[in-house]
Amino acid sequence: FVGTQALAAVGSTSSLVNLINGFFIGLSTGSSVVISQHFGANDREGVRRSMGTGVVLSIVLGILAVSVGIGGSPDLLRLIKTPESCLEDAITYATIYFCGAAATVIYNMGSGILRAMGDSKRPLYFLIITCFSNIALDLVFVVLLKLGIAGAALATVLAQVISAVLVVRALCRLPEDIRLNFSHIQIDTMLLKRILLIGLPAGLQFITFDLSNLLVQSGINSFGEVTTAAWAAFAKADGLTWMVSGAFGVSITTFVGQNFGAQQYARVRKSVWVCMAMAVPVVAGVSAVVLPLRSIILGIYTDDLEVIRVGAHMMLLMMPFNFIFVPVEVFAGTMRGVGSSLTPTLITGSCVCLFRVLWMLLLVSRFHTIEMLAICYPISWLLAGLVF
Image (cartoon, rainbow, N blue to C red; front, side, top):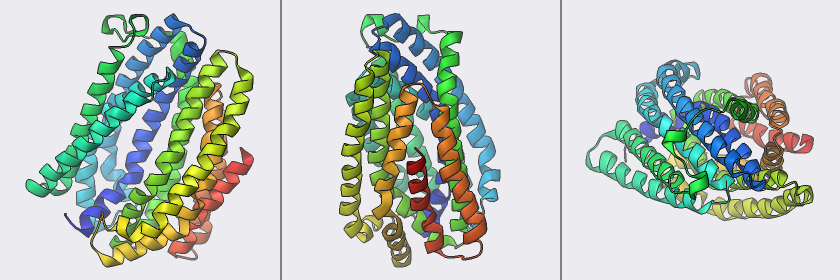
């Protein structure tokens, strides 16, 4: 409803948003692993103390995410060569968006706690409510009130706050022995150390992923506004498969954590292959459904025919290979579930992130085509999967 320039502006912030949010959300995943292990071992006191420590950590991380996001966005957007025509809009969007970063961290921490105890339904219900709220607010702020970029960002912030309120309310209504009680919230230093030992490498993995994606975004931006807008629309459509892949990564982490805590190691080993056998065909199937509809799906985000053409070409280059990334998600999630978070960070940092940086510097700079840029993604996924 606003145009190609606005779509490009929002798209140019995606890597930055993922970088900052991803680090703090990655840090918070340590809580869900520790809680799932205590829950599997039927240690209710350990669950309660881990939850209290995790909630305090999420509040601190949320405040830091707001500060870093608002303060660092303008310089980072210039650093990745955001097209001048949409730079001002991109800064506006990022600045408002990061006002809600604390709510995003709290929601992810809270939903991770619920999943750690086997409840994946309520986080889904909360997310459905949040998404429909976001859509409704988008229509009000962007279409009716004509607030443009600022309206889209404001709608997202308010939706994030709704998600945080819902998940905190759910934690306060858990059974009494593991219920979130604000009068008992405090930091347990030993548990905090365990949480950070798992969460910090996970956060660094998000950073290395998204730093490489920032470099890719810089390369995309160098092709101009149309390609930047096409990449933004492509990323939205491609997210249909990434959400599925990520969900299996989250579920295996929780399942492995609970069984590791219960010392059911045979179930841990078996679950890895069961998860892989489910995830690969599901991700491949979603890709097979989305690909023939790529132009129609891209048309949801823009009516610019050139943007749709370029975006559809990108989808055809990359989406058939999305299933290759499944082993990376499943093996990394399994390792985190047993408390080993450094190994997957090192593997993805070298095989995915460093590889993409070298590819961009050595090949894309010399052969400046979308095809050369796109092919580095499936190659890096295959490399990481083999090492895992």
